[in-house]
Amino acid sequence: MGGVSSKTDESGLVACEEQALAITRDDVINALSTVKVDRGGTSLPGSGRLSQVVVDPTNRVMFSILIDPSEAERFETVRREAEGRVLAMPGVSGVFASLTSERGPNAPPPQAPQQSGPGPGTPLPPPRTGAALPGVKHIVAVASGKGGVGKSTTACNLALALHAQGLAVGMLDADIYGPSMPKLLGISGKPRVIEGKVLEPMQGYGLKVMSIGFLIEAESAMIWRGPMVQSAITQMLRDVAWGDLDILIVDMPPGTGDAQLTMAQATPLSGAVIVSTPQDLALIDARRGVTMFKKVSVPILGVVENMATFICPNCGHASDIFGHGGARAEAARLEVPFLGEVPLTMAIRETSDAGRPVVATDPEGPQARIYRDIAQKLWANLSGAPAGRAAPRIVIE
Ligand SMILES: Nc1ncnc2c1ncn2[C@@H]1O[C@H](COP(=O)(O)OP(=O)(O)O)[C@@H](O)[C@H]1O
Ligand SMILES: [Mg+2]
Image (cartoon, rainbow, N blue to C red):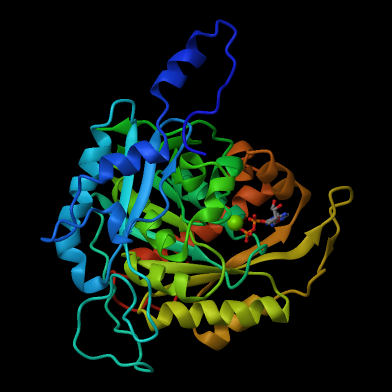
């Protein structure tokens, strides 16, 4: 539901005020009906192009406008006007409006460059289309072929390890369907809106962090349609005051489907890290991940094997529950760098789930050392890999 859920404040005052300012979806649609999409005067809501309008409990409004990629330029004007109208509504605290396009069977992916040419079956055009992010030196995706392999845990601890090297690090949680950075980094609350629609990133253990988890309630994430996912990520990338960063780590949605491919292509990535467990099945998925990034010419900075060896919390004995070394062998086969192995430990599981990531809370411990090592290799590979080039073979020490 739109509007503010009526919280009972002890004084009753705050609740009343909130109530008075509550914005409903209908209010937004009303405001948008003054926005015309063509010369004939068709209104935006009447055009069938308006997505579901979402109003969060802090009166932030989110919607998208469905377009054909060829209409992008014209509709950018409409988008801005729509955003302005909503922002002018009394009580609205922020707007998150985007252009999205459905992908027809033969249509180029949304945001692909307009090229006369690639028919179905033709390989995707190699250049990545996203413009660089001013002030951000490198954007690195952490990806996995499937969920549950520890991608978010690895992304979070790698980001912290890079920060421990003295780098300015941002963390973008692009896993729209399962955002986990608020929990992993123990951050709650909502980001502040600076100037209309630019959001201030949240802070956690020295990282600048943005996640859809800060913006919408878990349940409303369900209504986001495919094309909105890409546009939400693009906006978290572009409408957040990241400032100067050495590296922005992106926790990608798991999998290697169209959505991930489009995103890999639309984000100006310097490279990608693939996280895998050592089982055969996970490795097959990891291979798909490598192939996906190669397709869009994103260099693979390396593969991380997660949950390989189980370290017993009582006696410290190591056992290879899922096998061991599979990811290293796979990396060699695929001719991509291998960054390291993270064992399955109680410390990592407990600290992750408690919002106290191990690299930040036990920086001198054995786990932190492993992540720091991986981070160092990653950074070395990155520095030698200007965006758009293949990563060089890794040479450490
Ligand atoms: N190396 C590890 N040792 C112990 N537990 C881990 C490790 N890596 C991840 N986990 C745990 O596994 C679960 C899934 O990890 P998560 O990072 O959320 O995976 P993904 O993002 O791939 O879905 C979490 O409960 C997390 O704490
Ligand atoms: Mg995750």
